[in-house]
Length: 289
Image (tube, rainbow, N blue to C red; front, side):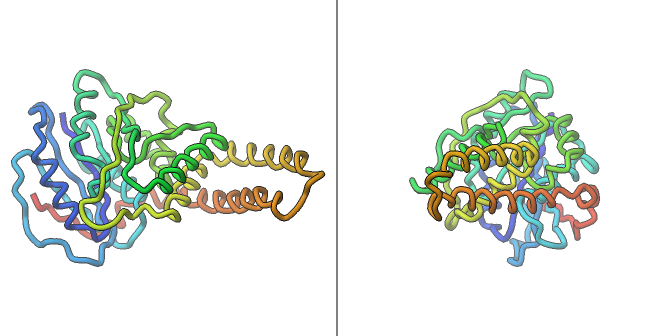
């Protein structure tokens, strides 16, 4: 069974080469053939200019993009590449910095070993960030559930059968939000516990600003539901505060209107023409194994 691991990367070459080593050291069933596709998001730091020799990894390709396009679009490009240009049975998108723990790949493979075309997601059960960030992350999930009706407890770290990859490629939302798109097209997942690891090198890149953008990007996939629920919230909230209207009580309305504006703009990122032509943005391909 051919498994492609898709890793978007921007400059963090030290981490991704350590991840290669960690994946190579996994004791994986010989029935699985593991290959890696790295999507280099126009890094401006040079990577080590050498071939690598890993016994348990079939091949490593680096797709060098012409311009920086962001995490979600790199994963989308990687999925389109393997669907159009390669052979595979399953795809595993994952971060290249250690926060998606490589040892959990085996948990995915255990689930697909005796099943047919099943989608497996790594459901976050523990995170490694500060308490304040964890609280904000829980708030993000609550807001997403409230305004979209979707409880999304997973990120990019998933295991997708070829059929699901095909569906993702045909869904324009994939160009904007991976987890939002997957939640839109897939109703049934197998969930395995996933612990958010710590970065191999340097601090986490998931800032509060990035978390807000991540949350709004997911919500933008379900824009219609969000707008309807927002309108209902505004009506009910105005009725609730009409006798106590003030700048302070009006603050939630202001924040919601800002969110509506942001979500509407993020939804414009769902550009199917760009998605279809994404492989034309690959400047070169390096085979380092």
